[in-house]
Image (cartoon, rainbow, N blue to C red; front, side):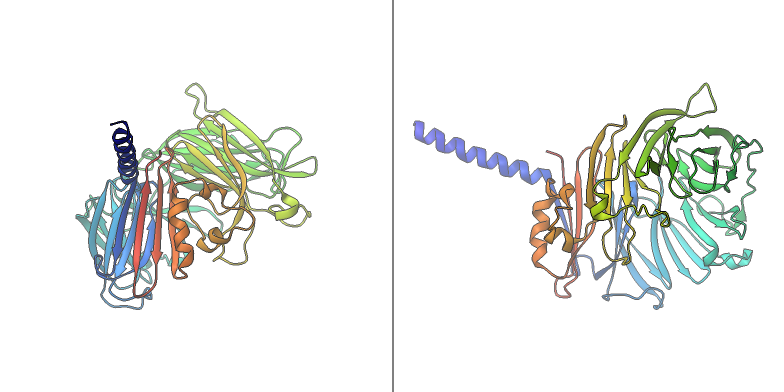
Length: 448
């Protein structure tokens, strides 16, 4: 009886392990049979999910087709929301998202055809308009924004680098007229004592507010003091509030180059700034997180970190030669987590950038600080498979590592996207471009 019980217990343990593993991993397969064609485009929609575009032909050339039928498969990052719908396009085709809607944009030269969908794939509205009617062309547009209420906003800078905003109401208003937004810039000048003052830039939309910022510093290059004048506008672009993000450089430090990075963390409702520093002749970088103070128009410092450049003699992330001007650090947000990377310049857009990758939690505790190839949003499969210098340590400790290894034997495979959310859940999307396979595999692992 004792032997039977032990065997039964062992079998039960194996069953539990298999059952647990089955429910910790989700897998979706899309191929030319289930999706009705070939996956020719992938769109990362940030916190709103991702979209895959299938066509009946392989390697579609954008803008060279008349009446191309696109089948779009949409998923949220946790795979709880799913939708599929078809859109016919004639030009360059893109998918965007905001808090409430999905948007398909079919652009042929200056003519736009935009459709609006809910997250179940139901078409809500569609509009056609030509930006040439108001004197715009595609080269003048710096960025396109899609807002939660369903507006499309064009961000344009003129020859003097002054900001202009144009808006089309895609959902509520039946008119297809593009209207320039009458933007009342702040008259106050808290940067008055600064020697250099930049122009206003739209840095994003957060919690229903449009946020503009203007930088000031005591010199255009290598400033030892730097600040931002920040203005909040409501959905009608009426000025609501102004704040000053005061000097964030410590004594005896200079900013290398003329730029710092300013970014919004929507979940924390805070502003993160980062710049390359020169302290006592050695390059480094700083990261600071600021929030609103209800009793003051000057933003309150939550935390400040100053870091050395790791292994700079080997990897040359920063060339401290007195001539080269490094780009400021990149800032990405993952819920309350803040990712900052100092990226080495690339000569080939196809290669994955080597960078010093740092990860902070909401309180500024450092969760990672190491040299890596790429970040948490993409993966060069060839580099991951070889990795002679151990530059993919962020991947090797994850659950997805084991499912990625078999793809190393397939020359036709590429990783479209990877994602690790703030709770440790993982997402990996792999495409096998072999014409006989043509398969996209979507994996999701819940944190153990």
